[in-house]
Length: 426
Picture 1 (cartoon, rainbow, N blue to C red):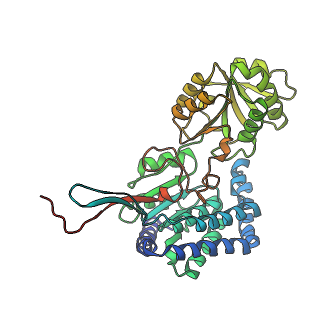
Picture 2 (picture 1 turned 180 degrees about the horizontal axis):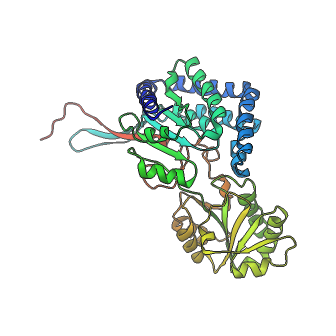
Picture 3 (picture 1 turned 180 degrees about the vertical axis):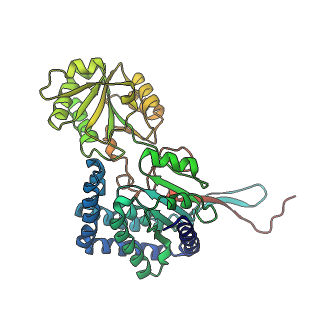
């Protein structure tokens, strides 16, 4: 497909999405919820054929030498599909926020002024690897009364096409326009260049992928972008803390799954508990093959652990998002140094403190400048589904419009409404 053909195709998708967005905005909540439940049912009844399509993507990815964490992100296991279906049902059961009026207040002039929540209109979603993002984006788009144009990575094209067909079937079966959710069928990168430069059709772009992709889109887009560049998340083990709990949480935050952006990449340990905590977590990491990139103090404590894979940390390690069985480890004086380290080196995605000191917990919550800040919980909970949002379109580390997991409200806007009874301005 040449550049002219791609441009024409994207213009058509944009016009169709714009037209569909007007129908979605006025569709009753009951109809949109019916579409979500229908999509959940289709995902459950099509698990086997979806896995057949997914197997072609995985086979191609392995043959092309894609790294194991990236191959892992491609997989549409029965559990992944069941979670997608459950997310659709959770969204359908949630209250409708479209048309919700808040902060209505009487003014001295007699008018009443408030704000109404409305759909954004059309969003473009550009993502890599995970095909389940197709369902997350589509379901949130339906619930929030928007239309969307989805452009997945070439490595998941067969899976994305199969999922998009089910989405459009659910829409049509429920009396909604199929064009409310459209998948860009070409894997040509020129399609991305076109999609991010159509402000007449697309109201916001949401990239979800590697740092290079997001930097490029942020630089070249002609429409607003909701983004996060990377997920350098930290777990800080405080003095005092429950050591047994801290070991359990720090293990989960790193090893429950290595590839997600909410896995902890940095482990900070207060000096007062380091000699108790580090040998215990180090033994677990050693048994699971996790490489530890350490400062001198933590390395000295971990050195005696059988099988421990220890390396000296470089300055770059404190900034790194590994997405792999690697973690940076540093001993700090206490909560003040931990907060300073996180605010300097983190990507402002998700950071956690494990502590039994209430004042330390409150200080951490107030002062850590990240989209999600946690007390005594694994960073792996930084997820729209786990937050009860039904699904997420992504996790934003921006401070404007949306921050953290972007669910329904992140795909809406507010407009002022004024209710009067013939008032005129004097």
